[in-house]
Image 1 (tube, rainbow, N blue to C red):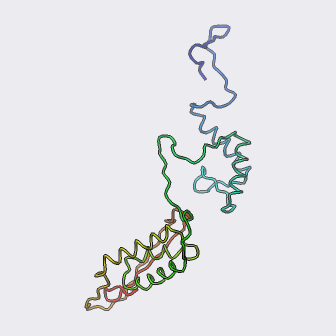
Image 2: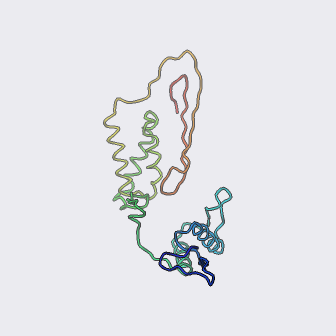
Image 3: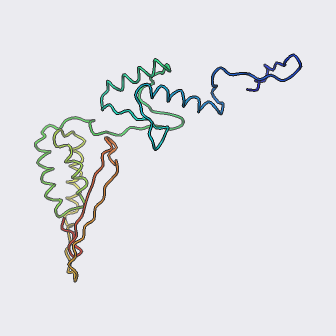
Length: 209
């Protein structure tokens, strides 16, 4: 490395000397690669496995437990001396805002009422496929419904009340064809990254399922 300004020294014959680094300095072009090799060595020793598709992505499958996360943070601190800054709100010019997740909220006062309404909505879906996706989502919390889920159910009821004249329209068709369409969301759920599939069956151009 070229000597920094103000610290230039020359050799015995007046030649310009260079600095030999004992470790990578921040800002050097070699620093990112040196840091990657250092971090990779730690992750592999901890049990992480590099992805074959992306060598810079490391995966460690252990389960969804806080104990495993705390243990990894302790190991990280022992090696690199990290500092816990709490919940992220601002990072490199990016402001972070959090939205409600599936397990945040208060349990409903009467879960039986929630289950009864959602069960009735499943019958309404037969003639109102426009609410099928929403009903599918609220059905996923029948075991332990929270107030945020009940609020979503009330939103569906308000929507139905304002669209009572909507429904399925069956028209005359010269060709009685049976057609089916299906699709799936790949990791759409932001809480657990699970996928959701759906389908629609048409008979003679009219939806039947």
